Length: 421
Image 1 (cartoon, rainbow, N blue to C red):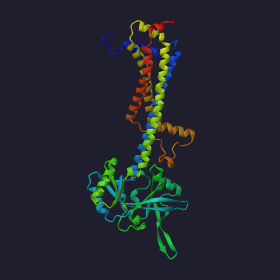
Image 2 (image 1 turned 90 degrees about the vertical axis):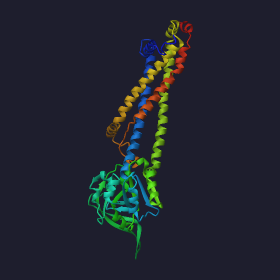
Image 3 (image 1 turned 60 degrees about the vertical axis):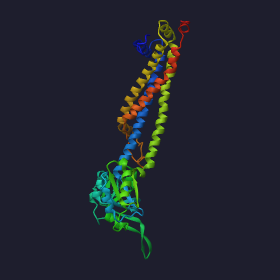
Image 4 (image 1 turned 60 degrees about the horizontal axis):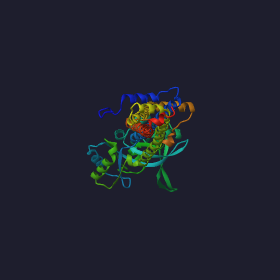
């Protein structure tokens, strides 16, 4: 070859493609090549689908959490802030704060004729809460605005309503952990509430344990006086909520406890990231095994084509040409596997919720129980960055797998290859 000749000649591509096709003498080798393509495609498909499901799970849980809870909150050290209106003014002066909502929070036990259940009761101002969280859009029955001061109405989750057998208009008794001294001794404080609304967040933790009432009614129940437990904030960028809430607390003067949604759910999201990394590494090993199957495939091809390699070398083909032929053959196998893997992986990821719904209907059970996995739906969120990363890794591993067999073909001596032909 001259110095100006191309690195890859057309005849090298032609020979590589010819070795991929089935012939009467080499059907088994061609079958092994097809298995290599299927292995890479299957491994790539599985990795894309699994990553999409885990991305979807993380995305859905994060969105549902941010819909129910506030982005950040500021509360008193002893769960009491008297000058909360000044704190709200300070918060609203920050351009990154969208809205704020004061709240009174406490724990109690709801008692119905059917059962009892522990709850976290949030006393809120409906209008401010609607601007701070997305709970208003989760109402299955009734409206959040139906909470009125001194009306002692209560908003409960759908799971809690089913467990206690409650419907709109039903009465339920709230027992608080704070007691009242009576001649008979210390008695728990009680208050009868009327169910005004039922919400459905789609997360068992909230639908089972969360309840809302008007802030004035909660203040009387928990004896908060003129103060509140704290102030919730909604910010423009939820990922910056920790920085915003700390800045607002400093402007207020300190002496308060600050938290945000990332801190409240830190362990949960950290476990998701860790699990996703471990699963990615494990499934990447499957892709590697499928890619390295190309080594055995090309070694068999080299042995099967020794005579043809000898003839090509005798006709003037260089070692580099032989190297290129078998590198190209393995590259075609890897490319085909990656393309088919991406195609089926993307197709399954887009349709995974529908596929799982059909399988659940046929088998008669749910893959995700809400009380275990937070959500009952089977989410999927395809990220093209993951698709590109997986396909590139599969392709690169396939190309690397061709180096040893290609080197063996390139170092084959024509005389030895043709000795027994």
